[in-house]
Length: 312
Image (tube, rainbow, N blue to C red; front, side):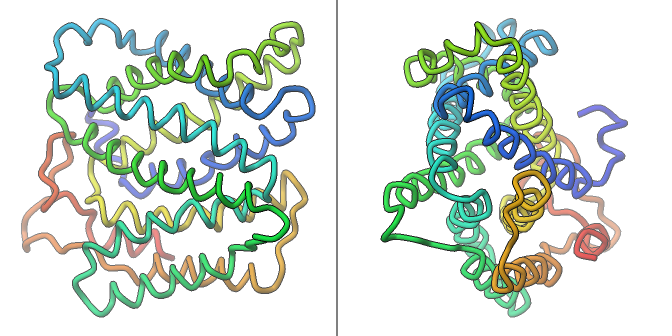
């Protein structure tokens, strides 16, 4: 991590990720009229892989990696490919806010493993209640959509776990690891969505829109994720991610005109309250939390002041 990047509070990187995480998918929903969902998913992955390839040239690092790191990156790539594919299939059938709410149920479970105080338990209860209210589950009308959203949720939890390991590994810088994983993911996803993406190559508008979806969905937020995860404990990051259903709801209103109900607004407020109440692990007085990618988990939590500002 560069010195300039290290000076930026980790929750600021998270804020960038929170905005772009669903801005790109909202644009992708508009693209469904021109390209099938699996095609949009592949365009997203492939365009992000192209940007990372030009920026980082990650293939130069592959020969110097040990076998466990290669396996970790390959596993992360497979998760990225499958996660994007089922996510867009779910978006074809369910509103953005609903998919987002289902997506983060396993994330909250990850955060629960590190809840050791009454304050953190209260934060988790608020977050769970908020996600419950945000979830407009329609099992009768869209059982396949719910199943796809649930599969995406499990894959997103795996993304957090594997992404956190890559961010903390000393063998490869986080962003370079992400670039390698994205290249591999584009190959893994090619049999899934390559054929569906073919019409975009004869439609310049669709091709440009697909590239834009890739940059806003996979380049900006994933880089911000890596910069945040390198300095936040997994449980702290996982609970902060609970803000994303609220972000999805707002973006759904602005971009897709998906106006939330009163219960959904209440869910947004509960999720935000859960993040505000959450208290990360305290660092010893006078000590500074490590800021590098290889910093240990125990001392990598953000300071109380930083998260207090993030919570409002």
